[in-house]
Image (cartoon, rainbow, N blue to C red):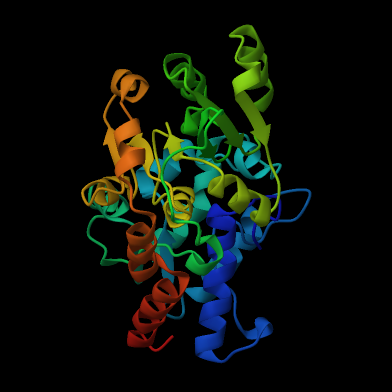
Amino acid sequence: MTPQNQVGGASNYIMNIKEGLQRLAKVNNDDFRLITPYNFVSKKKIGFLQYSNAIRKLVKKDFFVHSNSGAGFLLNKIDLETVHHIPPIFKDHFIHALPALYSTYKANELIAVSEFTSKQIGESIFRSKNHTIIHNGIDTNFFKNNDIKSNTPKSNRYKTAIFVGNLVNRKQPWLLLDWLLVNKDFRLIIFGEGPLKIPLSIWTKKLKLNNRVNFMSGDNHKLRNMLWESDIFISPSEMEGFGIALIEAVASGLPFLSFETGISPKLAKIGLGATVKNIETFRNFDINELISNFDKEDAWSHINQNYSIDNCVNKTYELYKKFDV
């Protein structure tokens, strides 16, 4: 089960990899179940016991855990209630993490979704476990922007920065407003929902940024259109296991500015964006050069070659076959 209220990001990834593995394995929906932190959830509660019982059935066979964030991050910051709107049985975040920790402990192989996540695993209590890096993937053709004629913003308008993600503490969305106060020639699209949306709206008014901030949400087609109309993707998130929204943005033809987390350092090294280490640098980074030097066609080609969902599914399936799953 995936969080149906989400757009893009992990929600698309989970569905796409499930469908891709089903196709390669030639099994129907009744014969295949992808275990993720979103499984075994009803509308009323997260089924901790159901989750654990399902894991116990699986431990008789080899199986895998896809680690999107690393065990230490799961233990400290998993937040099903606010991020995925799943009312939990227990308020204690440690209890939330137990199913994920249990499945990770019992897994025969871990799949890290980025070099960053691989490093986290290496620094966790699961450092002795074998793990393979298989990057997340997206539908690159869906996000491809065929308008690659110019990187120059249209006249008589602000340049447009866009953030896509859940409005929760981990994403540090308040820094977006801080950034906008300094970058006065930009407007900002905040595309997402979450518990911090109302506080952010209030502060937007207090800071008199109403005319330059648009709060939006919608389906994947609306998300793609907003990405296509933007000039740069910015993310102040303090922690990303991979960063699917960032990959979707680059595939849509946008450079990025983010903190050093997830896949962003690897992409920054080849000129697809820039990463920073602190708030001050994030606030004052000159992004106009990023925009003017960005090659949309080369960016899409790189994402398509390395981070397509087909690439992700094929590598995952080859790993599964080694274990006769």
